[in-house]
Length: 246
Image (cartoon, rainbow, N blue to C red; front, side, top):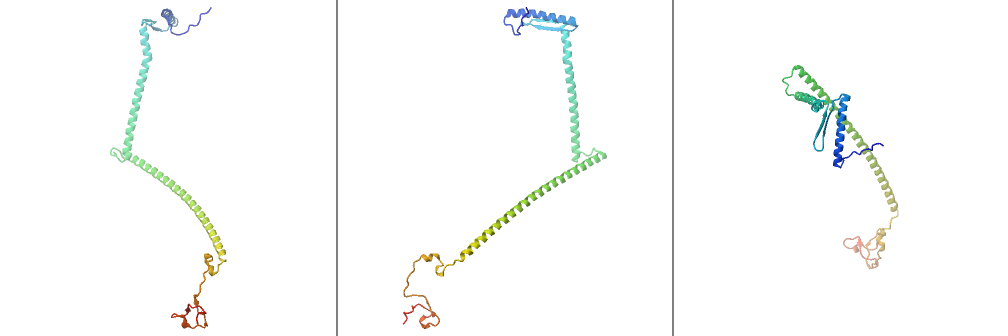
């Protein structure tokens, strides 16, 4: 019958834990020895118990194997770090030199520190300034053309808006003239029905007539039998009623 699988977890029983540690420690040391002998490998094994006791095995000596391990693992990293540091140092120096060169070029373009320059360098600087000036003028012309095109576009939009407003105003004026004509024709139609002079005011018909006796506004007619001397000082009109004069 096969051996059952042991669950890998901490053994709670102290005695059983110590027995298991001793058995497996011895087996591990035996396997390390066999590996070093069979495969001609340099093997080093270090074990510390729970009480701090050291158990070790080294086919070529534990200290020698550990020294070899340090040379193999840490020295290449140190060399790599040193190489990277030197590379960064050179990169910083290159960037610093380039920055100083750009600063000198900027001062030269601004017309400063021109004394150390030779005639050829001054000619090159002049060519650079002329090229830069030509590019600036070209860019300026392009911007002005774009602005003119934008203004023309706005002008066309405003012209179209003005034309639409003018058409709308003309249409409203035509409608106003039509309404005015209809109003005038209606007023002319109502004017054909004129009132009698005595009825010029429609409210007069509602006033009751008043009987006047003994006085009328009288104007002497031509060929009247009454003399003008009876008309008073002013002559012409009289306030006497016919039939009352003897």
